[in-house]
Length: 215
Length: 215
Image 1: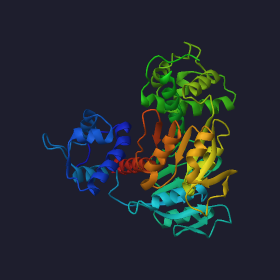
Image 2: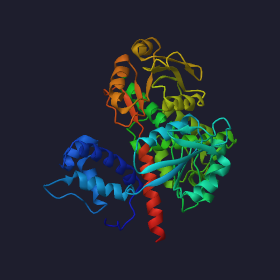
Image 3: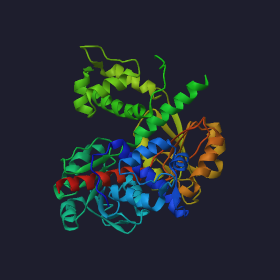
Image 4: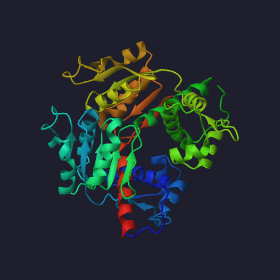
């Protein structure tokens, strides 16, 4: 795999998983090649946007030939770091924690939940999709002993930063945070703060515009 | 409220909920005014970006004075359409459906879940946070009779489009979709497709970059 030379903008990075998802659907349907125009009508970005985005990575398409679906899928996977396995722990075994464990379970490969941590004695000792719910007190030792890469935070916002600090101390390299605050991490630990309600607010905006437009 | 004159880019719209969240924290702390520089160090966008974004709405700040926290919070809320109440139904009472009902429950105002719909007879008749789980067969009638605005799709990807079609037929004006496909809707129905795994892929990218940078 070619190493990219320059830093790619966050906006492009955010579009890559979407490209990859559509390429995966095409792969499954047995499609070999796709032109940027065909890809455009499928994915809803302009053909010029697609060419510009993919040129960031050296441009995998050939003039008059289009993109190799399998080739582009593999390249984007590698760029995203999805050509390896990530070991994860979940903190918080409430509905959200359970939903995330179920969700990641269907990935089958790439991201594997190795343990779930809780403070509630009623939940400790149970299991979700075959993964044990353990006492939060033992999390540092578990992360160290099992080379955990990612911590998934499904706690209340009140304790989320404290949980993040402990996970960073234990040695994770990334945090996927679902608590409704922006978690802060040392610079060597990547973080994605998922704010579910922001997409609801965006929906409300588009709904009110649609109504206004009709007036 | 002033009506905006021009169409605002989606990228700006996506930043507004974040501005609003930070303004809400400031309000709660009793902060009256904030300069774009202070706001910048808090929220992590450049001061020029902030001024540019807010200029889209006529610019609420005054030179040498800064932004009124309460005023800007209210304006952004109105622009996002958050100055009214939305009635919602959830389809799918699995872990994800439960997590979403719990999550929206804490909004207290603005977005209210009126009913949850399921096909599983074991779940029908139960309740989640005081909201009844009902038979999916009755969803069209319920949406019509209760003037439901938003349908929240927490089903498998196999049935998600069919559920969306039924909700649109019943008269919702917006769909918040958590099934891992892009739902299609008629042009008068707004849709937000939430792809949780895309943020995980983005995290993986930043983790692999962080590792490469250390080499």
